[in-house]
Length: 256
Image 1 (cartoon, rainbow, N blue to C red):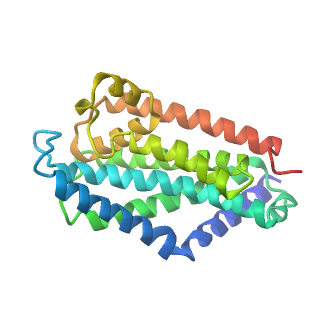
Image 2 (cartoon, helix red, strand yellow):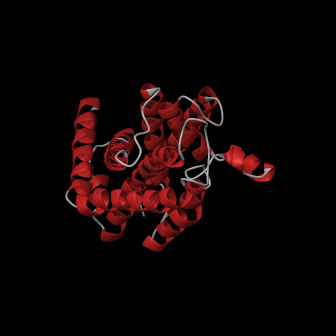
């Protein structure tokens, strides 16, 4: 049975990757273009006015933030949109009658979300690096935070997809939770430039640790210790993954 479940997980993973890749102009090219526009606007306006680290210009500082923001948002969008679409169209029943375990569902959906997030992030990096090559001081740190962040958001996307019954509910989850937490996580600024109260708010935002740890991989400097960021992100991933597996195992809003 475990071999059947593993084979099914691979098939579902392939199906989920193929799903977003078939519309890659929308799911990959469009987010890359959005990130480039952010870079051109903010980089052009603030390059000569904002100094973050001593040896790092603002445009170079901005690039890792945009890359990680793209990874997080697209990993979330992949699992959440796929699940809500299957629920609304009714083809989710085709998965429910298979012998797939809840762990197989989790591996397939989260794995595909990681692939989409990393593909989009790589595209953003490949395009934006021409504006101001940021370098990679600690590439392993950057890779670890990209993988953990994509997995965390893919798992969170599953929770959103399970909870939502309509597309507007899913949009509300993304617009009122994911988007604000991403934009307030230091994508466009260092938290040291904020008033004390907003620095405190940033420190309770797990998205901040994902982006700050990822940025450490580029410059070797960060707003907080990368080990603290690693602990927060890893702990958040464990909590969200456990909650997701629990919901999948119970069939929450899957079996009516």
